[in-house]
View (cartoon, helix red, strand yellow):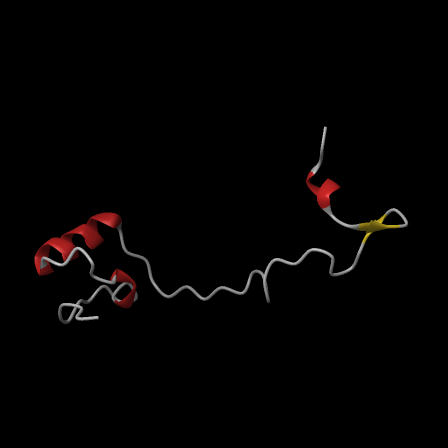
Amino acid sequence: MFTRLDFLPYREGKPLPGGFKLGINPGLVKHEGTQSVLWGEEVRERFNAPELNLARYIKDGTVTDADNG
């Protein structure tokens, strides 16, 4: 049976420092906004734009105009 640490590179019985990294700075996240899926579908229907980039409008939930690319 394997444990979570079995895949780490080891030297002399200890995991190598820096042998496994989770990106540049794991845990550093800045919350920009949250909207529901229903909000997103309502926006897509209102603007009749299935390819609308919702990420531009999630922060405050205000959609000012249809996305033109």
